[in-house]
Every structure is written in C-alpha cells, then in structure tokens.
Image (tube, rainbow, N blue to C red; front, side):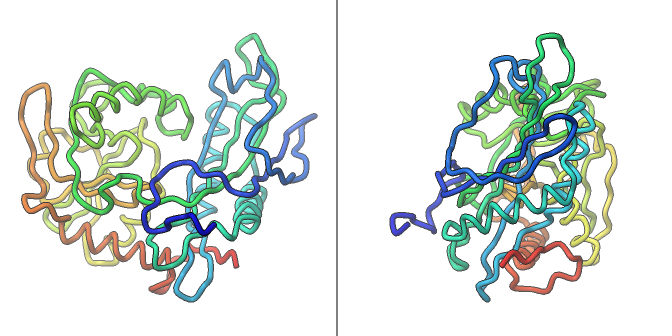
Length: 339
C-alpha cells in the first residue's frame, strides 16, 4: 500500500483485495459471495461471450475531510442497470442487491479508498452478464452479477482542463432504436475505432452526430455533451444517448444556480453559438471542451482561447465535487455514507 502514489493515479485497473459475486440460477438470485480471485470461470457458450448479453455500471466513492466514505448516487446506477437488463432480456438485479453488493465491495477494500487530499476516488464497477450456455440466439438461463473496485485518478490525463474533440460522420456509436440508451458493452465496442482514430489525430474523444440524419449532436463517446449559452444549460435529447447520472446532477445544480435548463434536440449548426461546452460522466465528472474540429469540413468551433474551463462549467464542477467529498451539504440525498 505504501507504493500507491495517490496524487498521480491514472484511470486504469488496479488489483485490490476482494470482489463480490452473485449467481442467478434456477430462476432466482443466490447469496453474495466474496472472492479474492481476479478471474471467473465462464462457460464457452455463455451468452455474454457470444450474443452480447452484458451490462455494466460505474460509480465512485469518496473519502471526505471528516474521514467518512461517501458513495455517490448508487440508487440511480441500480435503476439504470435494471433498465439495461430489461433492454437486453437479462435477469434483473434488484436495487437492494445492487446497493448491498456495492457497499460490501467497498468495505472489503477500505484500504484502497484514496485519502481526501489526493483528489482521487474509489471507482466501483458492477457487472452483469449472461453466464449460461446458449448456441441459439436467445437469453441465458443463468447470470453472474459482480462488483469490483479500484482507486483511480482522472479519466482524461489533463484532468479538469479543456481538451479538443473531433466530429466525423463516418462512424456511429449506436443505431436509432438500438441499444444506445442502455449501458451495454456493445456500444463501447462500436466506439473503439472512431476513438482510436481521434487519439491518433491528437483529440481526446469523438463528438457523435445522430445516426439517422447526421443533423443533431448525440454524445461524446463515453460521456454526454452539454453546451452553455444565454445563461442556459443545454443537453441533447435522443433515444440513442445513455442517460448520464452526472448530467442529471449538473442539470439540477444549474437550475439551483439560476440557469435555465433544456434537454432537446441540438442541431449541429448550433454548436457555434455556445459560450461553453463540455462532456460529462462518472469517470471525468466534467471534461471541458476547448475546441471541436469538424474533420469533414475543416471548420473549427472554439470554446476556450486561454486554456481554461468556462466559468459556469467550473462552478458546476466544483459544486458537484464538493457534494461528493462532503465539503458542502447534500440537500438532494445523492450521497450514501458507507463508513
């Protein structure tokens, strides 16, 4: 443990002491099991391997100045996994089981919760997949739900600083009426090629347009998009966008800060009217966008000329982080005290 450099953690896997697991067999969930193994025994014909019956979540726990550990919006993650399970016909993990498993995994790995002053957090990864064998395309009869944790630093190595993104019409993250609104692995597999191209060109991520008409902004790869103008927080509405819990929080905070909020279709042409823009999600909280380059037309959209985040984005970021770490009151009931 003395070898962990808390202040310089990346967003990457790190072995911890224990994970928790629960199996769905014979039509019901069993008891939570504790394991120190990083491996799972999986059937060669498991539907999670062959037909993409898989869903995951990501949430964080934070150690406050008072020493307490706060788990952020765990009930919302539980509800989203329920929705994903519904969407691809998996056995549903109850909200109670989900929360119990997350808290148990954290308590078993308390020594990996980063200290308050480090700026790092404990990342919690719940995972659900079809473990039962099927060769015909149909839902599995058995499922495995598990939760593992690890300490992490910022998702983007730049931290809370503007990064540049690109738009390309050659790639889609999710199809209309497809699985874009569910947190399933296939959506992320579909984003790998475009994401790799963006990184090779020096961008942090891809801004996707709607798959049907290429007229509207969808989302930024692993995160939701938001723009700010005329004292209004604006985020796209689309059936193929994952409903970000962080985005919901920011929208609430924006309202309480006196901003108007809009969730609606956002035409791509509107991009040039935004005063600030950002990507938001659990991993990064907010990643301010400095510039978006349309590599098809050569046009660029600037949101930061001095390398600093916009003032409203910064206020939103600091307010949300203060609630997560317990530095400011939580009037919304977003935080669960673990210990």
